[in-house]
Image 1 (cartoon, helix red, strand yellow):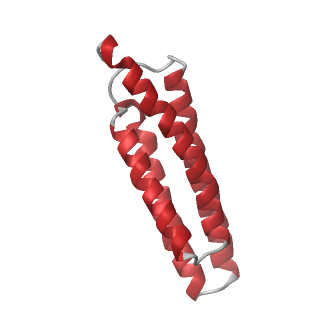
Image 2: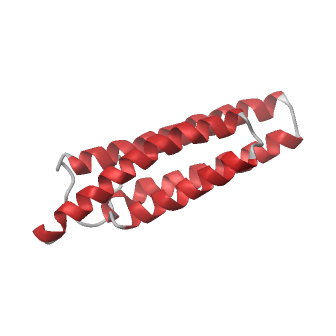
Length: 128
């Protein structure tokens, strides 16, 4: 990355970290209060914002895709739990929520490492 782009990239990484903080909180509330359509729409908009920021930071692409998958699994599990109640569904929903929270935190931590200049090489990486 040219040095002249560094401030803009840093700004996007900072905005991504802040967006992930908000998203993590709101996604947790969404799961707790399912089915609040206003909150669902807000969380969906936040996912789009996170996608936009992440697309400018290819170093974070693996964690971004993991979060996107975890988000889809969370929403799917919430819909299923809404219409089918059972012990198995509750246990599965708990696991899905835990994985989702771990993905949010994983992307946020990777973003913070990027900001601390520990991870400035171009392209995706597999390590967390």
